Image (tube, rainbow, N blue to C red; front, side, top):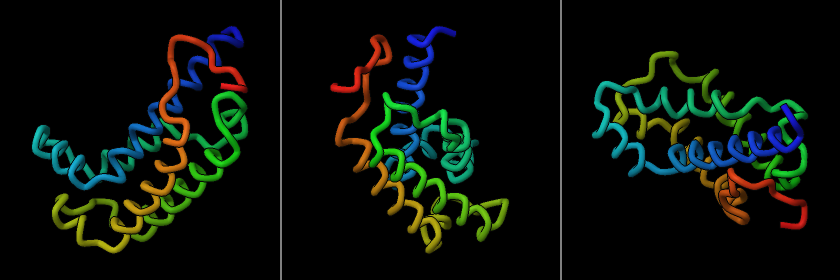
Length: 134
């Protein structure tokens, strides 16, 4: 893969992280998802989406497309998510019951904080390479 292609892939991954944070930070979005796909465990989907898009290794956070504050915010959210995964049952209850868990409320808050940082720059193009000064 060329450097240009690698950068575009990382930009797409960054946008997918924003999408995952949008779902994790919004109870209305989670309810909408559950209503549209009742066979899906939305709490598990919130966790699995993050696992799909966040690896946390040093190569993921090369610049572009991440600022230092974005890297810190994403790592912090990932730590909160990992801690919650360790302290909640592997099989989570239905969404309405999950909303009552203090751990899920903490996760929502952490996702909102990370999303706020990511939205300073917002989603970036997946078609053209982001430059450092963009």
